[in-house]
Image (cartoon, rainbow, N blue to C red; front, side, top):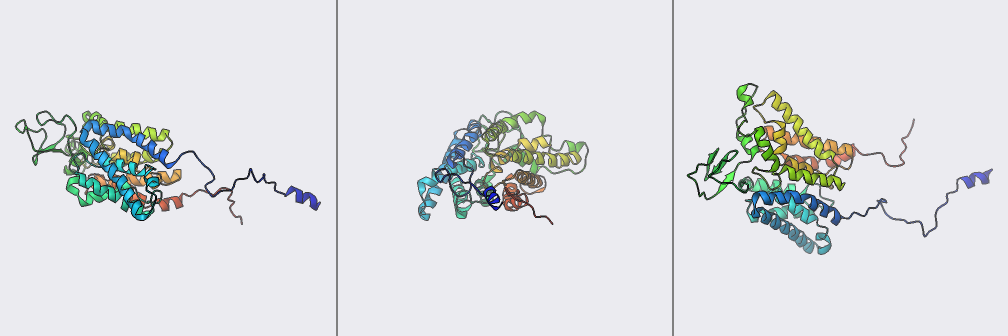
Length: 376
């Protein structure tokens, strides 16, 4: 009887040649960091192409210079830290950081600010924490926020899209030689510089009207017009290089979802939360903030929700955690847009929620495989 029980409890293992022992994780994939980064760059290409098409070759040089600076900053760090330079920059993570940082800058940004931003992104936000995979915050957003605090004037100077002429009609308000016009007069045929306010910037400088009524409903009529929505969707508005063409960003987002590189719940819940909050405020107080569609089509919401908040390293690992993370981003961004001092709150919202990702992961941790709860 004992022999039978002993035989039944005996564990038969495969031959030593067939048994492979390794450290976790035991689920392997053919994807490498370089392949993933190249796919992200491919998804960014529509937005990069749209920015060059809208702002001209100046946008191309800003993107190229910022990317080269990021790669150079990472190579310099590896040199001083005595790390393998080629292996580190060969994963193309610094290239992705450079492109994302450039997409968060204006086409009129001075080159020295691009250089400072590259070192902030690579040294301060990435390598000081141990390199790729250890950074708690999105490097490109850390650099953008740092530059916005250090150089507010340069970071909020926006150039017009290609084809702008001071002789022709312009949708929205424009500043020509320090004077704001709804349509620049024909007398100013050769200004030294032309800068345009972003749609969110115009909304932020518009006095708010509480309550309801005819005046409140038409408070943002000059900028929140359904006739402008198509232009906003295509990118015919001032702003950062990556926040102009919503169409290009949507194409890139679909590519990332098709590549299975992002969790679709993050952009959907992020954008949906902003739409719900701004829609509720606009319904009860239309003179306080524009319609939800205006908030979706303007500013950095789309690029932030698709390319920034979905960062593998700085976002939660569970589906429920991604939903909580995205809703938090939407709430913070909406509060800053409606009641904050800054016209845009996407960057701040993502960085703020990045800090809470470890707590979210702990809250939404899944049951380990093989775990059995104790009874009694």
